[in-house]
Image (cartoon, rainbow over all chains, first blue to last red; front, side):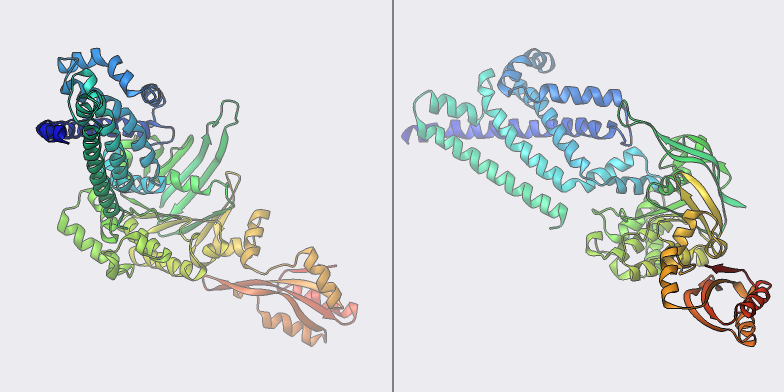
Length: 219
Length: 342
């Protein structure tokens, strides 16, 4: 317990780092996932921008990257992270890699949520002369907003999960804190302190997500 | 002038699997819809009627033929140019297809936003439309708070927002109960009468045709097998499928099975007489029978009315001496068509 008290400044720093990593990856990964997910949805057979070759490529890419365990993806994508962020290690590298992996995970969730929008309302929008861009922003995204918020809440938890291995490439955060000060120094109290903070964080975000989704669905 | 004119239109769907066959939804369809018509298109599911409706505003593209809408062949237009055409064509759907994330007022406002109307003009037009369909008090409600009939009235208000000259109603009442159906049909009639909107009604219910259509085309397996003024098709259907549709709402000529039952129950000779419009005076026919002293009983049939014109078939059982009956039937044949069923 005393060790934990001594480590409090590091714990707060780690919490801050986790929030930093998760916030940025949620933004970039969420955006990437939205774009790839929209791409999948719009290019599939029978959709408004049907494009078989593009759908095939996107679909293959998503199926290819999604099953790779993140810790392996982290190693495999390191050269790419280095090329983009200038360094293969540290928080920026891990943010890039998580955002990349999350894009493809989120893409499927976005695609599935968009598929719940009844094709009829898209017909209705087309019948009054709406074009694809307008349909995306006035029909698809608003109609699927509730499920999309839940999807983003779900991916948030996955991001916290992924950020835990940041320590392997010299990043920080609660995962790294738990491993470095708790696990490796045989101090379960320290480990559990980090776990507790993660649980509180996840609970809070899940609660917020549920609340916003309920508002969007008006239930 | 025809506002919608289809010339030899075909629609073929490519095979869904590698070895599958392609599906011909429409096969050489030609059709003229005049301004102000309420044109009914009836057929069983799979007859191609919904595909036909979706070709008129190019939600689907035709495989062959010409589709003239307001003097423009839209079959050759690009998607971008079609958006302008679609502003002139409203559409309502079986499942209403309202935007669940928008209020009633914002649903009706949607086509106006697409068409680029300024905000104040939109608000005024939405209020006017909601008033017209009788839902002024529901402006702030969401679609899932409305009944089916109310949803379709919102659908109609939305379809009329940009003052289109044509309205496509694709099975617009098929998800509604009979009473609500008649409310919605009455509203469509009002749209046609008040704003002069040409309406194309797709349905599988002859009742809908009988209630509002002025002209009708009967479709079967991707072809138009019969067309004409509703009165003509109802009173004298030519194709077998048309006769089947007519028989769903009109009790006309007894079927062989029904005839057998009639024979059991009634003695004498059984004849079916056609009554059409005021051309046939029922009093003249029954007068002949009375004068000849032939006893008769109406055993089957009925008189119907389409657009204020009566028509129908009456099947009579006649009792009396055979030569007398033959003589009086010869007289009646000069007045109307007589079919003796043996």
